[in-house]
Length: 556
Image (cartoon, rainbow, N blue to C red; front, top):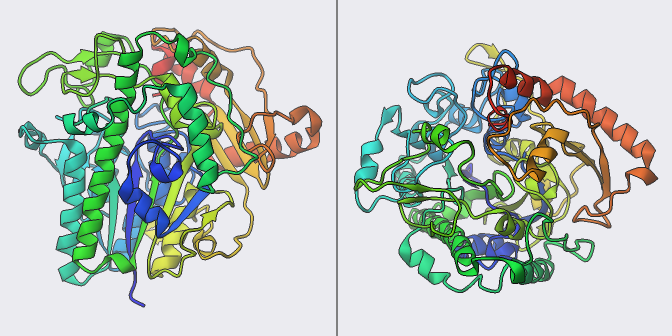
């Protein structure tokens, strides 16, 4: 069989149960098609935040090993470089060396320097073709750091019909059509910014969801869990976690019409992304490439409960790479989450809030940045008609991002180097999940996570997890962006232990019943953290505090 093409589709800040084939109300016929003709995973994990997940996905390493421990800010000497480093190779570099044509359409977010090309830019990390943004998020109508290759093309977004999600999809489809006549296999990385805030959406997409969320988050969470069970993604061991204790019952919520509009805008963003996936599939079909193309779909972290602005408004407005303070026709952009700002239009800059994020992560607790299930559990779909997959099945074994690169290597026959461009390369950390896609057993591995002090380790049925005291305190204190971190925390770390074979939603902490497992797994986690270069969060927070900067900026 000819070497397969590989299409890797990553979405941004989407929850576990948003898309149709994972129980959601949002219309995603193209993703549902991939799921029906492919394989879904019920326990696949990302790394809780966008840049670290992208680094791990592309390299097969844990993010700390790549230089991306938090985000892309260079916080040395007390933190991480914020650049993808030269100790790793990307999937694009490996496949390019094996004769593949390579393209990135969409978000990069692995480089600290956004203006001057350097070795952390996608054009220097294996991608022949690049259209997209270097920064982490931004306006869908007028994104900052929009590039073609190494040339800034923000002027392209001045067209009245420009919408970033569509532009990403169109570039990806064009690459498929351009690459096929050349006879090369290709690697296409499609990195959408949807549905990351701001809630920008096309009017016609918003209209399709009018009224769909009017029953509110409580009823919809129950229905999602029922559909997840009916789809075979979850079983009876997954109960519905309690509603986030900081959020009201829907019956007690104020401004219900505005609240529903927020979720409608979020849904419209995902709908538009799915439409784009349909156009990419159309290009694959037109060129005869679909049958021998491995398509992988996932999200970079759990749903985001972030409130806008993230920091004080004037400080937030300084971020010209992610925020336009005026629309293309000169109107002032209204920033924040309040009933006077109905999201969707170009002159708004809002997020959808914690209660809806709680719905997006049904049935799990917590959100982006946390290493509890709500922060790291992602939909994961693989479709490859000629790949001898066990199509229509659900894989229940746990895997994580470091396992994707080994899967691609096995599928393509590409060799992983010990050196690249004269430098030594770290061996990848994962194991191929390709046998699992074919209904075979894959040897068990221990999975590890750390992000901003939040930590977890999973071995078999057992998951040990903790929230860093500062993160928990910041979250409970409603996320006031102006808090100063003189916040050295005297609270001790509290490990929680869950038996996910009987408690998939991780509700019943059994750490007190199994102290020997807590001791063993926590010891393994500490050894892993030292090996991969985890920097304690308190060191980073203290360094920022010395400069008079708040905790929010220390965590990116």
